[in-house]
Length: 250
Image (tube, rainbow, N blue to C red; front, side, top):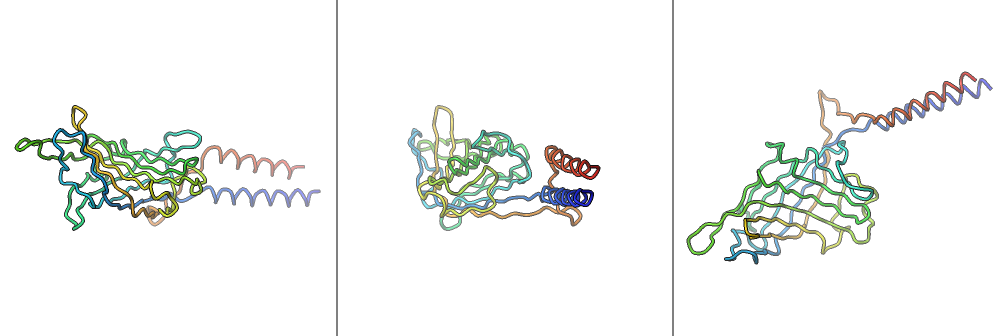
């Protein structure tokens, strides 16, 4: 019996250390790079329609980065929302490469991160990022009438993709790989919106043609930063160790 108890204890110890090693995951910065083409400009709510230099076939491109070791900050059983430490910037350029609109660089202003949200829904297989920063993004200026200028403030920028077959996502974690071919062709949406008082607004709508994912493990002194083991995991490890000691004493 003593031999069996010792053998069991050894197995438990191996399990404990294996579990510990698997729990010490490496923190990664996940970067999503995107590009798409403007296919509609909605200016119906303006008194004097003005595209504010935006045009069909303009290219919207940019990237957003997030630390995948940070827990979601909201949502429910089928939806996770991530709002912490997101770095998001984008540009709009004409088809010949001339800049039409450039957002502020979020790396220089941490307050912007509070207005950016990534949403993952596994019951709808929907992935979305929405920036509703109204303080730091640049507005746009156009002509209202023959002489007066008209300012529209930045309202939001949104990217949303969805798979109606619900076969892409198995959970609500940040996806580490994405293929637009897995999502509905009619749900590769981009929306850039500017507004002014009185309900006046301009929407620049487009379709994604590229959304790629890359990861980077940040290093401190040559050592990858590790994700701390949750308290619940430590409790589980302690239970295994205690069971092993109990068996050995018997």
